[in-house]
Length: 201
Image (cartoon, rainbow, N blue to C red; front, side, top):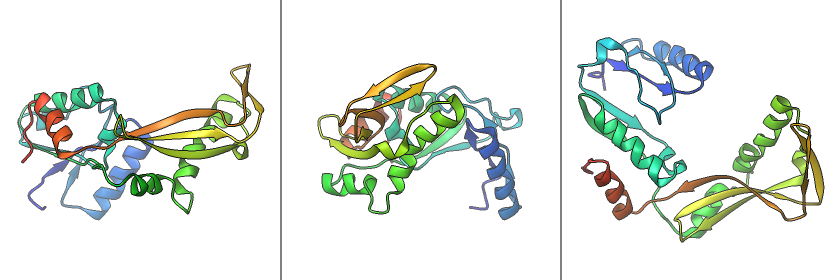
């Protein structure tokens, strides 16, 4: 895709963003990489020199499914309002056999479980909490009514953790919702796109 002159990655994490930009400049010396720190749910302030350039917005990795429906439509609408946006390449996850979906998240290697339970590590290191990571199991569940995978941590025993100077009691089997990922059909994705004035091509 040598006809692309500038790549503008947008992310809320400045450290990750700038490290990625350095790597991309090294691997693709013909490409101008101009990172923008920001939340993609808010209007992005692109470099001024690009304001009138034709643009293709790229939102891969099925991240749209992490957003509630209203926020997903808001994101698509805001991108639609950008000047000179010629196309929007959007990655989404489609609904599949629930067994396949659940086991994609509840993987045998435990990669997703490690990722999800890392929130406890961050609470401990950044907020001086006292969560015992070994006292929680990861659960992936398909919610057919809302067409989404729901990730949760399940307390494997009665336990108490300190957070912000307060004791939090967990009963055995208590479920703590962590994240969700909505899946789409061609019809529901089409409805979402249409509401934001996009046409799926």
